[in-house]
Amino acid sequence: MTALSESGLRRLWHGLPWALALLVYFTGGGYLGLGTHALVMILFALSLDLALGQAGIITMGHAAFFGIGAYAAGIFASHLSADPLLGLAAATLAASLFGLLSGAFILHTAGVTLMMLTLAVSALLAEFANQAHGLTGGDDGLQLGRMAPLLGLFGFDLWGKTAYLYALAVLFLWSLAAWRIMRSPFGRSLDGIRQNPRRMRAIGTPVWRRLVVAYGLSAAMAGSAGALEAQTTRSVGLGALSVLTSGTVLVMLVLGGTRRSYGAFLGATVYVVVQDFAAEIDPFRWMFVIGLLLMAVVLIFENGLTGLGDAARRALAGLPRRSGRP
Amino acid sequence: MTQPALAVHGLSKRFGSLVVAQAIELDLARGARTGLIGPNGAGKTTLVNLLTGTLRADAGTIMLDGRPIDALTPEARVRRGIVRTHQINTLLDETTVCDNVAIAVAERDGIAWRLLRFARRWRACIDEARSRLAELGIAHAVERRVSELPYGEQRLLEIAIALALRPRVLLLDEPAAGVPSLEAHAIHAALDRLPGDISVLMIEHDMDLVFRFAREIVVLAQGRVLARGSPAEIAADRQVRAVYLGRSAS
Image 1 (cartoon, chains in turn brown, cyan):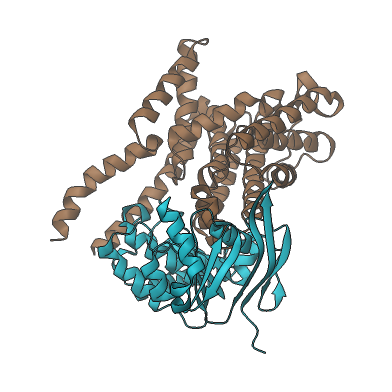
Image 2 (cartoon, helix red, strand yellow):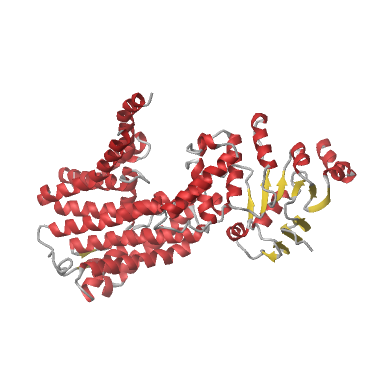
C-alpha cells in the first residue's frame, strides 16, 4: 500500500507542471503570449540539457539551432506553405541536419576548444543571416504571414490561445522523447561520456559518433523551439541566432538544474517570469535581477532550483520514511 | 599449429629520438597468464597503449586471433576483444556500481544505440551486471555510487567491467596497485578465478603478485624485450637481476 501511494504521488508530481500549464491557459488572459514564449524557451532549454547536461557537450552556440529552426519556419511559411506542422517539421529537420553536420566537424574536440568552436559556428551563421538579405531579411528580419489553421481545424486567434496549446503540445511530445532518451541505453552512454570519455572508449563506445547523434537530436529539439517561436510571434529576427540567446538559454538551464526531469521547465519559466516583472518595474536594469537570482541559486543550491525541491522533499519525506521502515 | 590469441611482431615506436618500443616480439597463447615487468621507463605502458591503439606504432604488426588489428581504432579493438583495465581510476563516479557494468554490457551487445524499445534488453544488462558483481563478491554494493566505494572494491569493479566485455585478451595494468593489503586478497582471488580461455597480460610492479599469478614473464627494458621465460627462469636470470639491482642501487 505504501508503494502504491508512493508511485501515485510520483505520477501526481509528474502531472503537476502540465496541470499548471493548462491552468495558465484558462486563467492566463493577457499573459498567454508570455506563456507561449516560456513554453518555447522550456523546449529550447530542454534541448540544451540533452547536449550539455546529459552528454557534456560544452556549447555556447546553441542559438544556432534555435535560429535555424526559426528562419527555416519563416522561410517555409513565406515561400512554401502556411501549414504550421509542415513548417515545424521542415525547421526541425533543417536544424537537425545542421547539428549533425557541424557536430561531425567540431565534436572531435572537447572543453574550451569545443566551446569556442560552437561559438564560432553560431557567429558565422548569424553573420550569414545578416548578409543574406534576400533570404532572411537581414537586419529587418522576416515577418510571417498568417499561419494556416492547425490540422486544418484550429485557427490561430488574436489572443494566442491556439498558439499556446500548440506550443504546449509540441513541448509535451518532445519532453516524452527527451525523458525516454535520457533513460535509454543511449542516454546512459551519453551520461558516461560526460563523466569520463576515456572510460567509455575503454568499453568500446564510439564516442564521437554517439556525440554527433546526440548533438543532432538536441539540435532538432532546439530547431522545433525556434520554429514555434517564429510561428507564434509571426516574426524572426537576428536575435534568434545571437550569442546572447545562447547565453540566455544556458542561464535558464543552470537556473533550473541540469539533468533533471523539470530543471529546464523551472529555469525557463522563472527566467521568463522574472524578466517580465523586473522589466516592467525597470526596463533597463532587469538583467541585474536575473544576475542576482542566478548567483544566489548557483551558490546556495547544488543543482539549480530543482536542487531546492530535492532538499525540501528529503526534509518532508525523511521522517515518515524512517518511521515507516523500522 | 595452435594460433596465439595475440601475436606482436617487430612493434616499434619512437618519440623523436627516444625509442620507447623497439622491435618487440610477444605472443600470448589462448589462456596465457603472462606477466610484464621492467623498471620504470622500460616501456610497459607504451606497449599497452600500442596494443590498445591509443598510440599508433611506427612499425610492426599486432594480430588478434590471426587477423591484423593495426588499422583499428581503440574502440574497435575493444569490440574485437582487446580489453584493458586502468591503473588510475577511470570509472563513472556518479553512476551506480551496477550501471557501470550494465553500460559496458549494453555496449558489448550493441544496444547502446537504442533509443526505443530498450526496457527488456536493459533489464538483461542489469541482471548480467548484478551476477558478475556477485561473482566478484561485491553484490552488497550494486546500488551504491562508485565514489562511495572503498578503493579495493573500485579495482574489483574495474575487473568486473573488463570481464563484462568478454575479452579475448585482457591487459591488466597494475590491478592491485595502491590497494591496502587487507583488501588485496579479494583482488588476488578475482585474478585467480579469471576465465581460463582469456589470455591475460599483467603489468605489475608487485613481484610477489607477478610470480604468483604468471606462468610466463616478459621483462622489458628500454623499450625492448630483455628476457622471457617461466618465473623460475626469470628469477634466476642474471641480466634481469642486474637491471633491477642496478635500479635499486642508484
